[in-house]
Length: 533
Image (cartoon, rainbow, N blue to C red; front, side, top):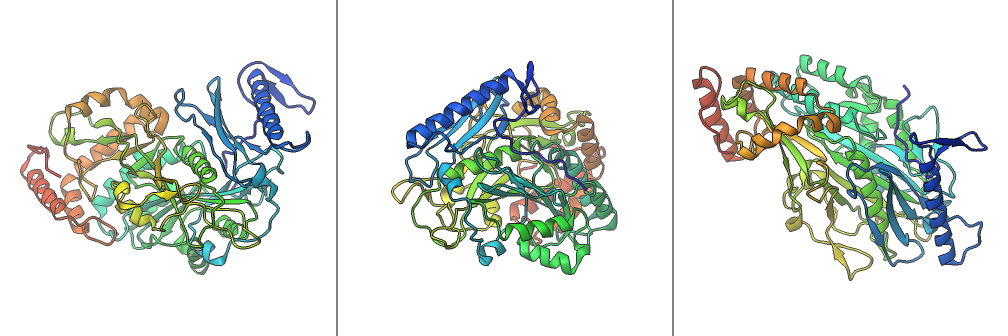
C-alpha cells in the first residue's frame, strides 16, 4: 500500500535536463542545478552577513520546486519588517522555466526543538489530512517511516492538507439523478485528482449511508485503488478528525476505501507535532467540478507564504482562526447547446471566466496556521480575525469582501483582506473547472449560452486534457447520459430540493418547473428557449 508522493525538494535536488556531471557522493548535477546551488549559496551568505553570524551558521533557507506554467505567473517578492521570529524576506526565483521558493527561516528553525504539543481543544477542531514535507537547509531531513508512507514532517513545519467532496448526501434513492452526477464525477472530478502534481493530501468523499447499491458500488470501485482516497458513509459534513477516527474505529464499515490505519496513525502523530509551525489546509471540491493539475500545489505554496507573511509577534488569542484562499480564473462547461437543439456534438461548451472580486467553490480553501509555542505555553493562531466555519465560507463565497472584516497584519495598525485568489491576474492559468448541468441544485446559468462561450470553447479542449486530465470522449459520454435521462433527472432534482445542505430558492423551483414542462412537450427532448435561472 505504498503511496506515490510528491515531495518538497531542497535546492540540491537533481534536475532531469541538460548535461550532467557526477559529484563525489554519486549524485548527478546539471548546469541548471549548479546555477541554483550558486544562487542558494549567495542567499545564505547574504543572510549570514546581514545578521553578523559566523561562517558555519545556517541561513535556514527553504526552497520548494514549482513548475512555472507561464512566465511570471507565480513570482512574488516581499520584504517584511518584523521581529527575529519572522522571515526577513520571501523570494521566488525562476531560471530556465523552473521556479524555487526561498524563505529566511533562521529564527523559525532556531526554536524548532521545542516539544510543546498542540492543545487537545485545538486538535479536536481540526479536519484530517495526511502530511507533506517542508525541507529546509540546516535542519534535519524529513522523517519518513516506511510503515507510514502518508506521514512526512520536518522540524520547521508540519503540513496537513485535505480535500472534501460531497456526493448525493440526503438524496440516496434518486437513482437517475445519481447516475448523471456519477458520470460528471468520473469525467470532471476524479481525473483532476489523479493528475495532481502534489499527491500528499487526503481526499474525503462523503456520501449518504443509504445510497443506492448500484451507485455506491461504482463509486467505491472508482476510489478503492488509492490509499489516500476515503469514501465515507456519512451525512455529517462537520466531522473533525478525532470524531471521524473515533467513529471509524468503532464502526470501520463507514469508511469503504482508503487506509484507515494511516488515518489513525496520522492523527496520533499530528496531535503531538513538535514542528515550529503547524499548517492545516482544507479545500472544497464539488463532485461535478475539477482542479487544474497544479492547483493543490499552488494552494499549499500560497498557504505557506501567507503563514510567514502574517506571523507577527503581536499577542494572539487562543481562538481558532482561518485565512481563505480561492480560485479566480476558472473554466465552465455546459451542454446547453445540446438541449437547445443547436448541435449534435455532445462535447458541450467551455468558456474561461475571471472575476478578481469573487471566489468560486472549487478550490475554496481555509488555512489555519499555529505558531511555535510562546513562552513554553500553547501554540497560537497566526491569522487574527473572527473564526468561521467552512460551510459558512461556502455560502458566502460570492461576497467575502462584504461579509468578513479585514485582518490585522504585522500589528494592529495595518489591515488587509482575510482572503486571496491564487490566480488573481487575468493572464494566469485557470485553476478549476465547473460543470454546469441540469444536475445542479442551484441551476444558476445552467441553461443559458452566450456567443462568447460558443467561440471560446473551440480552442480549449487540448488545454482541458493537458491541464486537467479531462478527455473529450468522456465528456461526450457524460453529456449523452445526462441528455438521455433528462426528464427523470430533472424530476428527481425537484424531489431532492430543500434537503439539508441543498439549495431551496423559490426561483430555482420555478426554473425547474418550466424546464420540465418543455422537456416533456418536446418530442426530440430539446427545449424551445433558454430557461431563466
